[in-house]
Length: 143
Image (cartoon, rainbow, N blue to C red; front, side, top):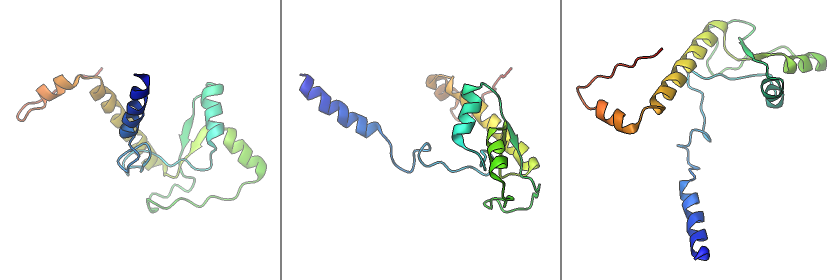
């Protein structure tokens, strides 16, 4: 019996694994209104600061502050010496490719999107389907 179940389980696992372009974990594109490009950072250093040291980090906007730069254009940063680069990796500021004004807007939009996703994921599907019929209104109460 065990020999007949193992191949069926393996084929079911492969069916559940989504490697297509629809899988947002594999095919992630940063939306224009939320999400950030982090530049000049090492993921291992970020992990060490957040997890091992238990520190919090902040975001640092583009140094030139130019709001009119192209959305897809990454800023040109001055070259850093090895010591400056090492210090930049170990500080608690995540450098982004956004101007300060756009950075604040994207952080706020990301927060609202995440909060809404958490609220909606905690509501049973049966309640959503009952309340979201045409001509009905849902009022969300948040604290």
